[in-house]
Length: 393
Ligand SMILES: C[S@@+](CC[C@H](N)C(=O)[O-])C[C@H]1O[C@@H](n2cnc3c(N)ncnc32)[C@H](O)[C@@H]1O
Image (cartoon, rainbow, N blue to C red; front, side, top):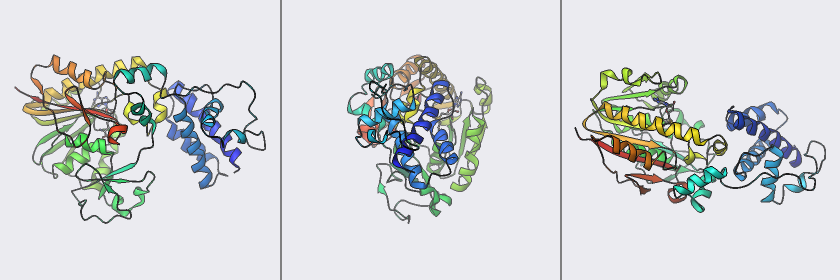
């Protein structure tokens, strides 16, 4: 493909991404993957270049752009090689006309950038939300150790005890060490949030929002497969990914529990008041993960954030009810908004007299309310807020 044809292909994919963001359709990575597969004439270099252009344009636009072409013109403002490719030739985009609309730049839609600023995420902190994420792995201590593992690329030790950082795009999933369950892909921030759980062998631990089990596997390794680890979620499809992952990782102490939304309490009846620790990796707006899903900032609404904050508190109350006296509650969101993080957890503590803050000294991050906040700028992790509380009676 010519460089101009790659620009035109990226514009067409961006049109799909924009429409899906406006209508709540498929995520950008799916649209881009499907769109590239359909362009059989595109070679691997073309695909890589088109993907770069699409994600570059998504990052460059603050609010959702009107069209893919306007988004590409925004990217062109910061890259002098792009505008000359709008030359109207062959499969390339039509020439730029005078006064043609260019999408707005910025970190996010204005209302959302303002909300982040209220939570002290502005300037370099805000810009870093749209940087490129490295690839972090966790060595699975059920099968290997960071000191002795032999990998095709060594990686740089992270601040977590079992973590290694590799360059973005390292094809770890094709490595034998991955196929044999010696390593898992897990962001350093996520590893740190798991450390705060301090799960120990023999305990009863609940991973209340387990999803596909990223944190479950980490907790199982900390428990050395001893004790009971309950992995629950309301999403059947996500939870169904856990069993094959657990098998690969050699995890044997997990009990899966599929929850009906609104009926979680009944499902947990056998374990009420018995858990040593409950990890709540709550559903959230994901403002801390824009490095991986930059287009998700076009999908959030103020109403959705308010709905999520309420759900997060409800899940915290549910988790607290599962704990034995002395048990630990670990609340995690991958959002940097206080509305979902420090302020929300503060409200929960204020309404729950039997739960008392129990700060955890993390290997990275800064204090925020009674918890810790990790940011891409300060900690080179995804953005997270996590906090701990102990049940006193
Ligand atoms: C941030 S994700 C969890 C990610 C997962 N812990 C990991 O490390 O890969 C939040 C999860 O909460 C789940 N969820 C939503 N509502 C829930 C509810 N009422 N009870 C339990 N889980 C819920 C979602 O399906 C989603 O999988």
